[in-house]
Length: 102
Length: 135
Image (cartoon, rainbow over all chains, first blue to last red; front, top):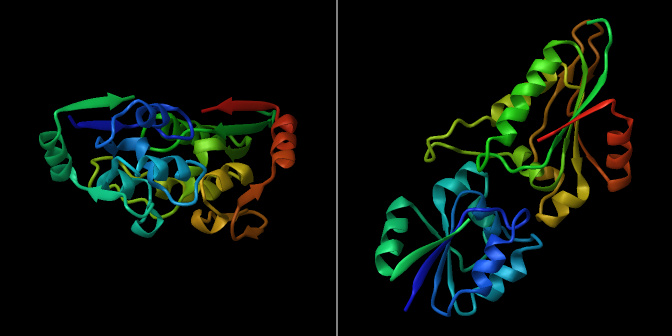
């Protein structure tokens, strides 16, 4: 059983990412999209929470949303994989279901 | 419109994810056109609005970053950024755009009106404003 969780809210404004991490099983994939991509940034107060989650979950971030928000590759937490729209589709296909955390 | 008031536009939302940042810019441009004294404050996720290097070519969204750079030409004299909000997001002033200002009558020039302020200064600036619009 592995699910894809999408998170589209900033971790600084809403607790969507925090709750998604807390209530997901090991092996889940977390895809940060829209304002959710701010959770991928190095050096923020959300960084440790994301790194802890990466112990047993894989974290992805959507390229087009990172670009729009000026988050360059060198500002992204090590280990987070950047995917494009085709990569998003691959993740949907590879997992049992998609759960959106709004 | 003979009265000039001190307007403060308080921006607390990230760009693109919601319409707040864009709507705020629209209203700021209107107020500035009526010769009011306009300042902007960026706080919480609002500081993301000023991070330079935005590229919306793969998102089908309008990149409105260039509009911020023109605010000085519209008479916006101050753009304040809350220091604590920057630090919580791992950002510094180096990550932010610069906005120039010039008074076309007196030829007074300021290279960059984007100013990082601490909590005490931000509190005072908002308290001293006559009207505060929140976005």
